[in-house]
Image (cartoon, rainbow, N blue to C red):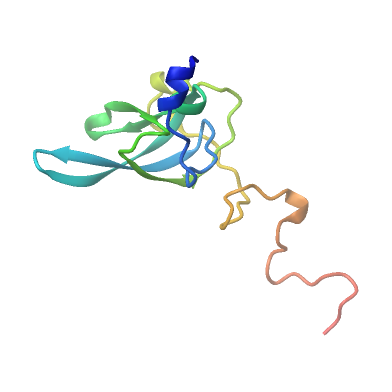
Length: 142
């Protein structure tokens, strides 16, 4: 990138969460209709992450009315982007999930990650997962 372009490049937003393909996200996007502004929420699966720095963008796919798939690409540095919330994370083995375009209904489901830390949104290892309530730990008696 040239020095001229670097001077006008926006810095990535500090409140942008660490997203990966396969995550279900809720994107709050500012829409201008005439003289009014409103926030529109777009919830779907992150299909791909591409670019870096000021050109970083992600594509979200959701199923709209009558089973029609809708994909939107958002720039991470866009001033119209209010916030992005991660609803759930899924196990995927690819960087671009284009195979979801050809799937319908239950075939398009992704396997969810099980143990999430609510404050950080990161995955806890199975050995660190909390013990089920009602189980008695070895060596302790009541």
